[in-house]
Length: 342
Image 1 (cartoon, rainbow, N blue to C red):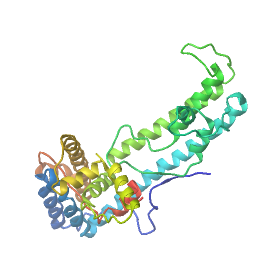
Image 2 (image 1 turned 45 degrees about the vertical axis):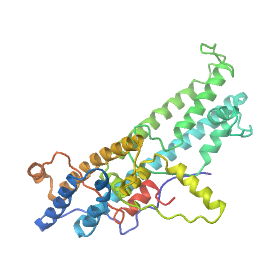
Image 3 (image 1 turned 180 degrees about the horizontal axis):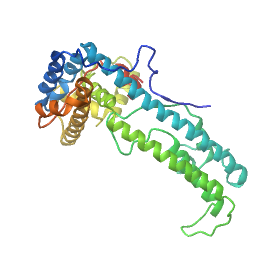
Image 4 (image 1 turned 135 degrees about the vertical axis):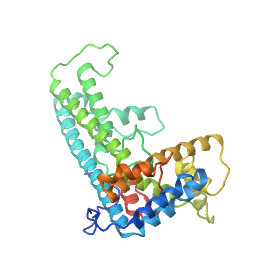
């Protein structure tokens, strides 16, 4: 039996949520946080990505900000674990519907068909409209994380595909295998199955919307993204000794082609970018600056308290607010949220 789990391991006993006491909060800490932030305000392009590590190391070097980062990490882990738990429940409900549908309409149970070649015309039908594919997807081990950049179409779980297969098999049972666009219904006794599929789809949609909103709003995820794009910017040397080494190099090149991190690495090392890469990295930078704005404001809110936040931000207003981060601090968040090191 497969399982759905979050990337990485849950935080141990030492990772506890913290509350910052403001009574003894030194002005020097606020000045440091704001000073590091202000330093980054004018950074663009290559300098923006190269400056990420400095900011994170500065935060990590202070006990209070280090505790806040741990709290954000815990919140990130908890949000991801909630989504993972929801996915597990939805998968179990989808499996129960599949069993009942096959029992009520055994003529459409195609769970015993062999998996065709992925390059054949039969693959699409097998993949998206067979109980054989359903069983394979539902039983697979799956790791779920947040995307390295927020996306409105991000869907890391298997439930959408399971629902597609269930809907297709139900339609075949009700209208026949060769149903046209305006088919005649041949069975009308499967309404309960249709209702359950509809309810499952509604629950899955709500769960996915929460996941996507968390991906855009959690300050811990924002920080982790900054860490991700500020780390590993040195293109590691490649030693070619065998044909397997060549294949691995080609595979890595294909996987990294036009990927945000790969382009960021090229930019950080002063390599020329073509028009497409330049457009993509500009979009990545704009997205990250938006992420930094939310993270920085949340960091200040937790440091200085709700009452003084409005005045503090007003006194330190800037045209573009962004703070950035580095690899040392966010390692655990990154591994948990993005599966770095898979």
